[in-house]
Amino acid sequence: MNEKDIITLSIETSCDETAAAITKNGREVLASVVATQIDLHKKYGGVVPEIASRKHLESIMPVIDETLEEWNQNCGGVKEDIDLVAVTYGPGLVGALLVGMSAGKAMAYALNKPLIAVNHIEGHIAAAYITYLELEPPFVCLIVSGGHSHVVLVKDYIQFEILGRTRDDAAGEAYDKIARVLGLGYPGGPEIDNRAIANPKSMSELPQFPRVNFSDGTSDFSFSGVKTSVMNYINKEQMQGREIFVDDICAGFQTAVSDVLVQHTLDALTKCKKNISNPDSLNKIAVVGGVAANKGLRAKMKELCDVEHIELFIPDFELCTDNAAMIGAAGYYSFINGRKISGLDLNAIPNLKLGE
Ligand code: KG4
Ligand code: ZN
Image (cartoon, rainbow, N blue to C red; front, side, top):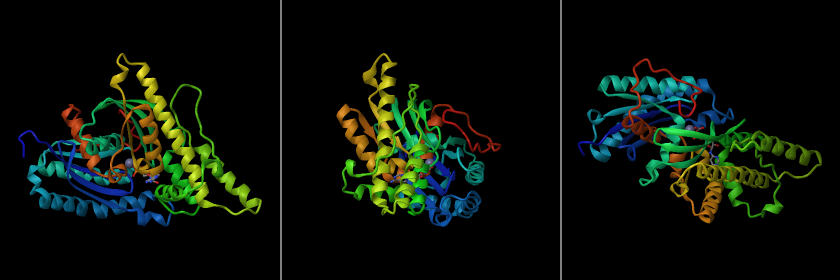
């Protein structure tokens, strides 16, 4: 191990994944364990906060132990080699966050190592640094998950300017709600995606749903209109005694959502370029968060970025949905860029914003 290497133990419990990881210098994953609670929440059609907290409590120490074991087997690492403990402190479900934070505090205290608090949204952005070792800011980042939809200018590793955000539902939330209406289970994203991708019909043969744009110059999103429109479509078809073609609704919905996500991100990049003296220095887009696993979105973004000669960075599938390696990456960059070390009085901030 190099003298200057920084080994980070990171912990993530903001929603329904209990995760821990060991990363080296923010970019290299030495061990990573994700215990998902999806099966537990499936029968309720979404995450039940109290059940999530209890399950995190049950899983957190076994997940950390398994991560340390994996690291030891992979590279002979031992607890004493850890330099930094990084933990998600928001946004997320308060009870869930507190479980991971308590474990993080205990580890930092026991190992006598610094504790760094990580914003979960910054974690999603940092996932791109793991997949793409060459990626450096500045770039425009589309963050789309179950709880967030933002377009952000990543100015450097710890400075962000929000260019657009959702005014109602997050993109993943819209996927999950539509899936529930269609009886496709939770989480809805992967199922709708698979059905949409497998659908051979052309655009003109699919039901059309609205794409919302605002005329105030922001790159904001709104997904509640498309959701209502899908529900109205289903009601109308049922009332007129017509058969509901679920796969067609999935494809029409996915096309509408991905059109908006791609267009708003490209527009945001164009606007940013106009405001800087050297526009050629900003020619990169990253797409992160659970919905970045969407095959339709990935393909459309790639197609348009190729046309515009924009470099595109989308993390590997397992780094799109919640994991702790991304928290380790963000924690490392917070640490080396001089952000404040947290004390044992660190509290969870359930509605933490990006850049706070
Ligand atoms: O990032 P994530 O794991 O958790 C949050 O921070 O919210 O994102 C979970 C969200 C869920 O809404 C899920 O339906 C969505 O990501 N998702 C997808 C896909 N895979 C996961 N949405 C669309 N297509 C997918 N393939
Ligand atoms: Zn997330």
